[in-house]
Image 1 (cartoon, rainbow, N blue to C red):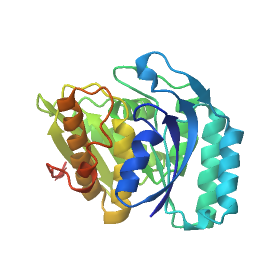
Image 2: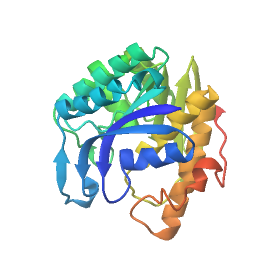
Image 3: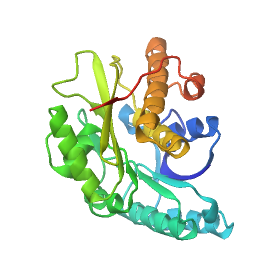
Image 4: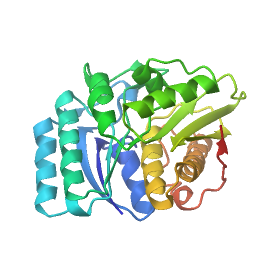
Length: 282
């Protein structure tokens, strides 16, 4: 499996490509990583150094990959944090070029915009670009519940409301949707849900909620879900595998008191999760 992953990069810690790349490699995928930014660490620390690349720089890297004849062997494009609108346009151009070269290629858009505890943290224009251009081009979308509300303009306080919002997101383009960090009136205290939807069927995956504030888990979930959906052919099965794996990594991270995901130390969770959770129809 060959995956072109266009996301942010940090030298220290695990977010963006630094969160998504190794799990994919551990599962056996070849990852062609193109970085949209290069930072010393994720911005949650409040201070960082580094640079945001331009759309032209990202495009030149895609040019080089294309010159090797590689795009025709690409199974999926994965995008995350875009940095600015120029990078967003470069990603969409890369998707179009890759799909022309490899018609069966799947585009997974992780619409990184914000979260409930941070609100919107991307640059102006990025939410609109994702809503109006990236999602219509996407086969798979993996928003968190905050991003689902923002993109659809719909509430998500109950399971029924989440399902309506997911249906609205499908109407924007993606045929497969995974929503993370879902807490509704039906979610028990101490639990956290994920919801996936494909071909008219929705499933929920419930895992224990951990007292943990960590960056990069969503990037890893999107990558794992994409890999397992391609490998297993089912969004529900992919959610079960990805959710079980990331819970194991988060549990190890929590137990160690680490501020960064233990992507490397807990790598066996990607191959054989220590605890498995089963999706149920919803």
